[in-house]
Image 1: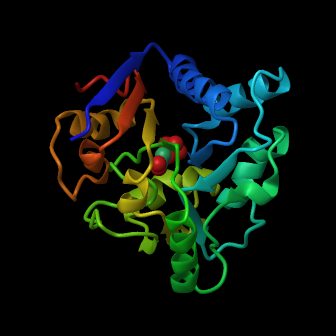
Image 2 (image 1 turned 30 degrees about the vertical axis):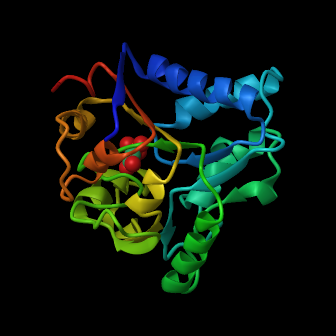
Length: 244
Ligand code: PGA
């Protein structure tokens, strides 16, 4: 069973800084680290800090390898809201990473074949640090409530809750939000050596309470973190901790 290290910070900036500190220290020790990366609004502050530290030459991404959690299906790779675009815009374009070392699931073409290919890639490596956000419904990656914890990379139908949450990135128009995605499974996520979950805001409070209650329930995907054998950090702001 995992022993989760739970850190409550004053605000979004502190949450981002705490997560960044762990990654910065690790990169100093292991410059060729394999990082698992997340998208969404939560990690933006963390990525900004990593960019700044890279510019100050305190850390380098020259030998870092990255694997992202998920990607939408049904929109092209170069769509402004694809996770491929997000990663370039919010991190990769601003650091000294070799883009050949950055990996995301392919949301174009056959989702089954693309899932199998990403699974094969992941099975050849071990992620050192996996960064996670969390959905208001407790999803991690795009593993929605009810997902079998033993599943590897797979195609998912996004729930109405997630489509609604993500409409803000698509001009608040639900019809524009992709309805499917490819995601690492919980099995893949739990394979990481260390996991850092970050969350801020009141709408995450219930999801955070559910992790910290220690239950393990497939209707709460994030509760799988309680099964992780390695280190798990859950770093939140005050509002996300408000139901603990
Ligand atoms: P958010 O998404 O960071 O945009 O809130 C988190 C998630 O859905 O995993």
